[in-house]
Structure formats: structure tokens, C-alpha cells
Amino acid sequence: MRKSIAIIIIVFLVLFMVGCENSVNPINSDNPTTSIAQSENVAKIGAKPFVGEQSNLVAKKGPKPPKPLKPNKWYVPGDFGTIQEAIDAVEVVDGDKIEVGEGNFYGAFITKEVEIKGKKNKTIINDGPMHPAGLTMGFRFLTGSDNSKISNLDFTVDLAIMNGDAVDNVEIKNNNFYNTIQAVSNWRGSGWKIHHNTITDLRTRNGGGIGILVADFSGGIVENNKVEHNKINGTLFVYPTDGGGYAGSGIVLYADFRWGWAGASEIKNNSVKNNKVSLISDTPEVVDVVGFELTDTRDDESLNVIFDNLVTKNDLRGTVESISLTPANLGDYNEITKNKLN
Image 1 (cartoon, rainbow, N blue to C red):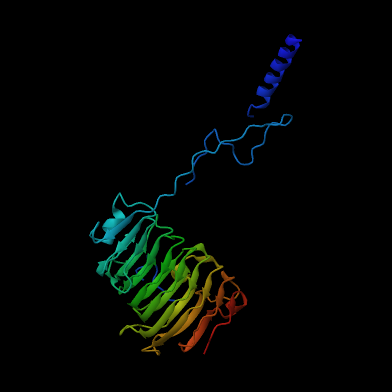
Image 2 (cartoon, rainbow, N blue to C red):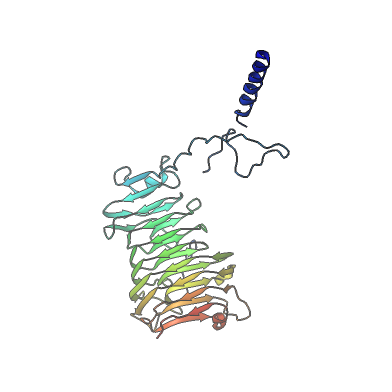
């Protein structure tokens, strides 16, 4: 009897242990005219156990992934004497932020993905690199500068923002532009966000006189740019010896086929909304002003490369001519609605 009881106890203990186991006439940009890899010990989402046996194994939680690194912040002056020195420095890398102090500063060629931010109404870009046309630029975006941001700066140069290498996804916000020939010139770029800027007065120089330009001359596709909540106001000052034959413009989408250029294959899906344009020319008989324009320089109604753009809720009452379309049938291919016009 005792042997039987001992055997039963042993069998019971073995079973118990087993059960517990775990299983416009714009000035061209060039023309002088991280994921963390999972540990092998961590079950991957979507993985399935072998069919035929039910697994009782419980996956253990791996270590928490590290927080993404914050971008470095650099100061001009302070860490660097000029904005260009900061951009060129090896230690300044894509994603970093450059904060510019009070006073006057020289612009730069931008070759990295950086955010350049000034002190509101106190940081002035009053000089910069030279454009081939002999005009001063503020910032010229070159290869490698996609996704950059410019904010809280005042510009008093000729060509304040110039896209020189078909750079995409740049943000231009909360800046002031004073008496520029062209304030923001986005040649060949897509995905730009140009918003909440103030442009006061414009100038011509046998061309220019443009607040915001979205354009192409190289036969590419320019799309998904947003021009919103900008104020463009004041006087268009016409150059004393300007030959005329064109108009200044607050905002323009432009396919440039002049001088045998390739123009654009498509300028599409761009948004121009909630902007206010109030501009008067001081010499309208030479160069007058248009609030907003769509222009294909070929002026051929049978050829259409500007389409599916949205132009809405803009206040264009402050110009003699609110909207200009070249060719005239571009209104059939773009949504131009709910704008306040003369």
C-alpha cells in the first residue's frame, strides 16, 4: 500500500512540473537675364507560431527604443561669425538649426537641410551672394538643401530667396521682404510651403517686380506647392530706364519657354489661397501690376501645361488688374474661385 501511494505521489509531481513549464518676366535662377532594428529575441509583429502545436511561449519585452536625437542648435554670431560659415562647418549636419541674432547679416548658399531662424523684426539679410545678373541674393538653395526652413528674417536684397537647383520641400514662413526685385523665386521646386510672409514694395530691373514666383524653365514637373496667408502690399517702383513690355505680379505660376527654354511639362496641384495683394505701380504706362497670374509664355491655347491648380479666397482688390491668364483659356483648366476681385 505504501509503495502504491509513493508511486502515485511521484507521478503527480512529474505531471505538476511539466504543466508549469513556459512555451512674368521673372529673373531666372541662372540666367543673367531612423528606425531601430529589433532584437532577435523579440517577437516580431505579425509572426505566427508553427501550425499543429500551440505555443505557450510568452515573448519578453525588449529594451525601449532610444528617443530621436534633437537637432543641434548653432548661433550666429556665437558659434560662427557668418551664416555661410555655419552651413559650411563639418559639425553642422542635416536637420540642425541655425539661430541668427540681431543686426545685419550676409546671406548664403544653402547646401544642407537646415533651419535658419532670426529674431522677429531684428535680423536683417541686407547683402549676400551675387546672382549672374549682377543682383544680390539672400539665400540660394543648392543641391542637398531639400527640407530646409527659413523664418523670422527681414530681407532688403534684390533677390531674397532663390531656388537654384530644383530643391524641394522648403518652408518659407514669417519673414518680411522690403523693396525686393523678387522676394521668393521657386524655380523648379515642388512641395514648398510659402506662408505668413509680408512683402512690402517691389522693384523692377527690366524684369522682376514679383512677390512670389513658382515656375519652371527646364521641362520638369512643379507640383504641390502651397502659397498661403501672405500679404503683398505697397508700390511697384519701376526702374528709370526700364524697357517695359511686361507686368509686375504679386503671385505668379509661370511656364517659361522664353529664349528657347524647355518651359514646364506640368505645373499642377499647387495651392494659392488666403493671400492679400495690394500693389500699385509708380509708372503703370511702362510696367503695371497684376495681383495674380497664370502664364505660359507661348500663349497658345492648344498647349496646356498649367492645370489642376487651386486659386481661392485671395483678396486681390488692391491691384488695378486682379487676375491675368496667358493664354486666356487657363481658367478652364484651373480652379479659380471665391477670390475678391476689382
